[in-house]
Image (cartoon, rainbow, N blue to C red):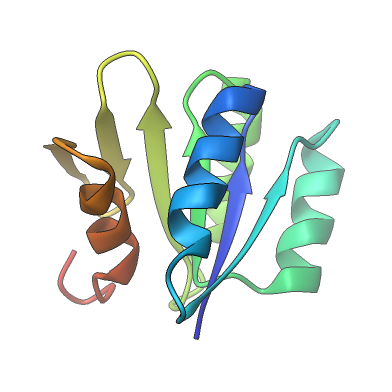
Length: 114
């Protein structure tokens, strides 16, 4: 089972991502809008996600914290942009989402593939 942590500021974006991924039987998804970096670290430690989906509009200092957490071999970071449908994968890849199923496939990819 893939554990997916969605960190978003925008309610519409987080609800859409959560609804899309929750349909997948092998995903366990939680969504948070943390107040600060400490809350992010606590949620990552508590939930131990395989994938973090990050809202690009959140503060850069928080993203730096998440990318530092990506040193864990099982943690993968996907940065989403609501405005241009792009997903930036922490493995220095970028691709265009044509439909919601593309996000599902990005979550499914093995870290070794990305």
